[in-house]
Length: 156
Image 1 (cartoon, rainbow, N blue to C red):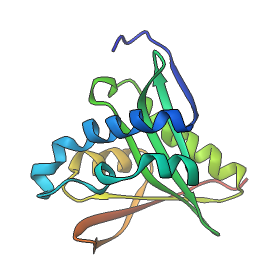
Image 2 (cartoon, rainbow, N blue to C red; image 1 turned 45 degrees about the vertical axis):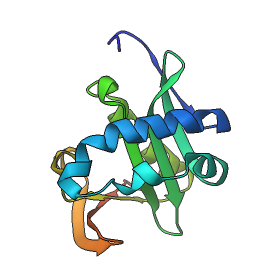
Image 3 (cartoon, one colour; image 1 turned 90 degrees about the vertical axis):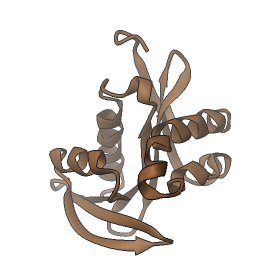
């Protein structure tokens, strides 16, 4: 992907589901061997997610190049998934998606973001730490060894 190509961010719609699935498979494929099985986002039903969840996409040349799925709670906003096509990584798309999550939390008057990643995704552990997320705990859920993070947002 051309570095100069602009990126459009918007709420996902049903026509984005196949592209979201492609992004998830491409972004998480490198972790299959490390984890010993496909990461959970590779098996997600993106058509259902688009119809039932707060899903966002990043479009490059009209094609889905990044995705984010949010789940608001009473006291925090959970980032359930954020992924970027490998060919689009390094352009700030993931960082911008995280920024959109902060904006969404502010709109919902929530002061905390939460997310989790697999402990084998060591690149993500460093990425989130550099963005102000703090590890809170680790747990095994459905056989996945997860690392949980939180980020406190300033008062609204």
